[in-house]
Image (tube, rainbow, N blue to C red):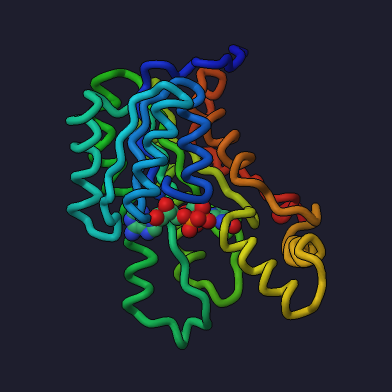
Length: 267
Ligand code: NAD
């Protein structure tokens, strides 16, 4: 099996959706460290985004752009691929990461929020994949990585739209993997458990203040709720798996839904 070496992805162009923060930013940083040109996407303070682009250009010496497309909108999702190709000449790696969720029982789930969750978590990957694939086929190479969730493989209480969208995303992953199986294009999903993004640290701080415990104790308590490991996964650990799926070593992995979940799904 070929070993992934630094710079293996030099010359490739990647679009990572929802990459101004969290898991998406970790994936974009890892891809850039492998030599990929990067189109960032996501919301945020314009100055912070400009300094992020500057960081990519100086630290990794790669071409970088940012597109603020709101991927809940069908036309913005479809146009994003055209924008990447216009700016960088091609699109080799598509990481569908942007996602949202709504918590609450299904009887109280506003239909408008259901539409929004499905639009971002499932419709956007559909539109991005269908517009990116012709170029990948023409270049005879491509990697599609969908950031799903453990909730794409198992149910969960009070998150019906999230569970439905992530199960749908894994179904889409398998369907696209079969349609591309004979070509050097792969499509796979990564299924994280609880990840230490900004929201996790905010929740831990809140719990620490409420219970008069240390932040570390609060983090451990939150992690222990779902994760048999007792630890949350870091964004960098999710990113490492996503980027491995982009390597030549992963060329024959098609349609997989790989957990990074501290044994959540092993129970
Ligand atoms: P985050 O909230 O930290 O970051 C989300 C990113 O998406 C940001 O860059 C934001 O600006 C962008 N975004 C939000 N709405 C958007 C829109 N309409 N159009 C374009 N971009 C938009 O998210 P995260 O926690 O890093 O999660 C990333 C992915 O990983 C999601 O698909 C999520 O479902 C999945 N996931 C997260 C966890 C976790 O514990 N954080 C666990 C399992 C799966």
